[in-house]
Image 1 (cartoon, rainbow, N blue to C red):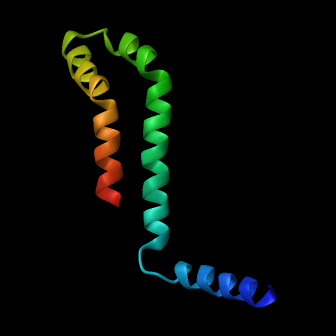
Image 2: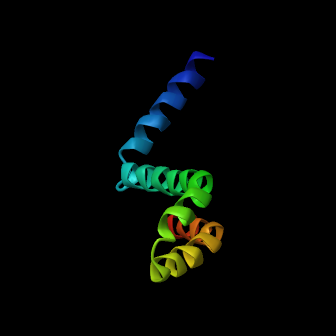
Length: 78
């Protein structure tokens, strides 16, 4: 059991030395934050952006495709 624990600790330390490992973790964090936060403020953001007609049209298109954009960002990082 101790040998397994030490093996797992060695593998975890080896993962941290991979190039770009931390950058990829931060990337997925920001993609998840984009998805979750925009999902909850979607309605309020559309109301706030509807002051001008062009901004409302741009945000409406973005918000309609929010799930697709989030999924595309997720797949781009994989």
